[in-house]
Image (cartoon, rainbow, N blue to C red; front, side, top):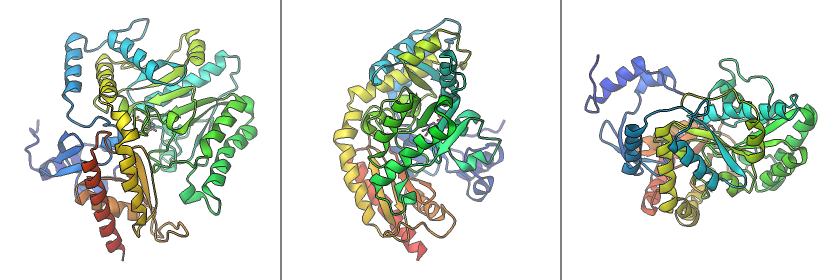
Length: 456
Ligand code: PLP
């Protein structure tokens, strides 16, 4: 066996990595050209790489490390649980204390009658559960023809065959035989890119009404559910116009279809409330959760289901589940993470203090010559890069080139920002301080300046 450690020279680690490790959403050519950046430690909002560089993590890992890195309480919760009961399943009428406690706590936190949790180990698995949950619900209600789930182009709901089909990423659909049948996509509420001459308000209504048109075309008796992220994350942090969600809610209510809010990113404080549904003022029947549920310290996700749907599903045996559904160690860590978010006032601070501060600084980036739109909800925001603000024009080069350059500049300036096409994204840990917000904005500005200079 090749013996390596965090002290092994970076080039050696990268060569081994490129030789044997298949990375998600990465090309082999990029790995061979440059090698992956090797992250060795992290504390608070700061990463350290194998070269000893300290990097400000403007993405909270992959939108998930809400309480920041290095929280010893979470490590202790995992260790305690591993010693007491490292594993038991929740199939066939068994349970354990961490799953019971976490379910009860989530029922308290979730709005309305969202009182019932079905666990998974990831957001993808949870959305696969949702496909089967809503279809099984309608079968049990005597309406088995209600199978179609409506989603949106450019949505991201995961990478498994089911969740990837729910998502609207055309690059994903092009690989491996997706989407599965009976998934229908409507357009996204991305005013900057697609709003044309309409005002944001008009455009929000127009996009929401596509849901009604789709239901009418498919036939209301065939539609099971509509799924959407309160704020689209991986699609580029698309914050919908204010008219969008109220109109969607009206349509969902009118046709009696199930509303699934995918809270995998928006949940657990990201938008300044416990759930993005609260920020957007919507009333889902099911919420998908993952990521911030454990701040990424353990892989855990799930579906929080309302009493009506859970009651109907509970009348039969739901032939579905994962070996790690409600895993005790993951559940114990998630519970401790929720305690930190609550008792340390993390969510409240994002809503009332650091969120407004970040908003003011972040939105001022719209004055930069490269930036058209700068929008943020709580601690998730994006910048639309453009060569011409007035016409909201995209760059002529292949989509993503300018964003890629800007992301590389950020990386060189020791700031992690992500790009989606020519949109630059932040989603930092929710514990980012005001000083760290200043650092983030300074480094983002410097990176934008350098990118701008490079384009000239
Ligand atoms: N749903 C949303 C909104 C997401 O952003 C993601 C991941 O980024 C997922 C689902 C999939 O979660 P996971 O990667 O844990 O499978």
